[in-house]
Image (cartoon, rainbow, N blue to C red):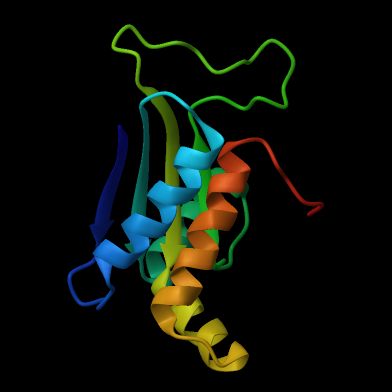
Length: 131
């Protein structure tokens, strides 16, 4: 079973079901066991705070991922949990950044959020891009 924990600041209108379905489908293609990931939709102020705290970057970004393990680091493989559920970590998306990018790319906001969460999921699986 795939579990997507989803949280959003109350004033951001998002289609939770659509986003969870897309992420669940992507995750089920990557893993064959029970898995869990969390998604949080935040504002730019919160995203800037997370960047300052964890990346020493005083700016907002569109998506951040906080993995429980990084499979690209030797000696840090994913750990088997006693309950058999692979917990990959957290994906945080900036709603204002998603809206801005959706407008620039002529996309629906929820589709952009899906794109950003899938990008965040790639990071949780150890696929990183140059900074």
